[in-house]
Length: 116
Image: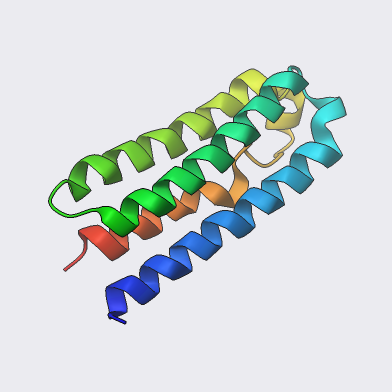
């Protein structure tokens, strides 16, 4: 197994663990959300993208740049979606963004696949 493959598997595991963490956050806090149904829907999107990204990074070759851009764009979109899900009061109080630590997986993927 190459170093890149080992690091990619670590990113995959991190992605899945953080989706589980976000699921716990949404389950615990959804009653405080401005739009709880949207919170659940975005959690589903995070899980779906995590699965698709895991498969895509296994098969990526020359088009890795497009995949990395899509990965970061989805992560940024999830962070921005916090504004539509949570109340302004909770955002001002320092509540975690909707994707919490999940968004870091795209940055890790950039390091693994876009680095030297």
